[in-house]
Image 1 (cartoon, each protein chain N blue to C red):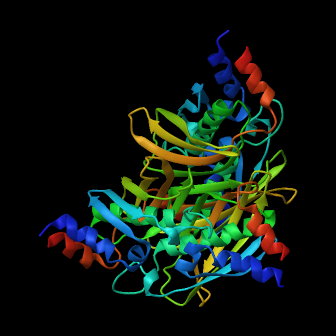
Image 2 (cartoon, rainbow over the protein chains, first blue to last red):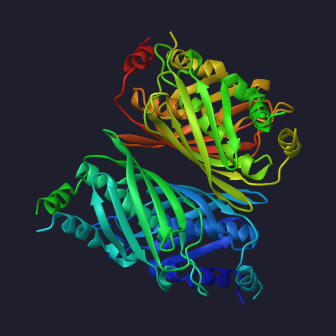
Length: 146
Length: 146
Length: 146
Length: 146
């Protein structure tokens, strides 16, 4: 059985990711990539498509967390995150790429870049996550073992 | 016709707020309050209810934006926001309260507190929003005028 | 010997605090207060007195760290901090007050408010610090014991 | 007369930069580089050299501001900044490099990386600055014109 597939499926089974439409493409060794196909429900305006800032953030937080989990093989809650919006997203697919830039004993620091499919930078985010311990370790480890 | 009701309804008609379940209770004079009834779809875990950080953030960003809009009567996009998670939210209703702490010519600074209905502090957020200009002014002003 | 005095003196002996002019007034039980008398050297302009953002931040970081140390009796390095500037500081004395709003096993979250002596809010900051472990524990504990 | 030299000298004449020891090496077209030679006064410990977080931040804020100024030819106050500490700095020279990643009508977003002279990443910072207007324009424009 393909290990990678299981880990990415684990994220797809998280209810809010499913509700939002996040799809994880890569989760490995402190690095993760995820995508989100935009539709009307993601808009902050009833009149036109302009992505709600919470959509972009939720994608960043999810992909950032996946990067930390892959480096630590444990569930790693977000402690804090800052997002900076660089351009409005108006459609297509958002792609987020996250890299762990520091993986300490207690906490990890993650950098996330979110682009649209025209290659335009939509937002950047940086967050601090717990890097170890916590509950739920089993699901992750089992997914990796299968 | 009740002015307050129209403004809060305007937020409820925003597709992502509706998709998430955000309900605005108060929007006035640099201050806003909103709520979000939690259900399974908001969870980050398939096994138990633990709210995804993106849900809490989206509520904070929405209520923060409402507070800035009410102080400026114009659409005011988020420039950046930081959220700090203080306790996991596991059910019930999240309530967010936002206050504009600085309303400058170009940007506004907003403070948001998110509690659960047991009164426990779930998260705090602080963000910078544009404070004037932008498109969409009409909808807001018309809602206020009605 | 007065315990309080020793702890505050410990901060005054830190070389950069001394170089900057930070004076700690209270450090106790997750709460700390410090002051900084402004002079020409703190300015970002050669022509007039307008405090450099790094001065305000350094005061916030110092007082925030003191609050975390007092709750944990251990040296607690800053992991990340965000500062929002609300008004320019142009003279007199800056006063910073810090409160630990979450003191977890691994990290603490701290809120800091910085005012001038006219009572005007100059900046607000929020940071994440390690909450335990680390080196240098002895100096703090000895200062408390004396 | 060398234009570059004048602009960098302008930053060296700012009292707090001089007090801290910041030296600007490049300021041009939305990009800036500055250095800070570390000495005992920058330490947060009386016993050993470990750089105070406020020193690293002040360098980041200064170099970030220089990058924004160079893109706008106007004084551009910091609105907010977040810094994440990746490794302790224990001596030598800190080098900060800043790039404007978004330069809007009202605000600019800047990314700053701070390394030590062993090439180790010490911290990363991201901030929002005003991008136009403000006082003090003349000094900058005159320095560029000379």
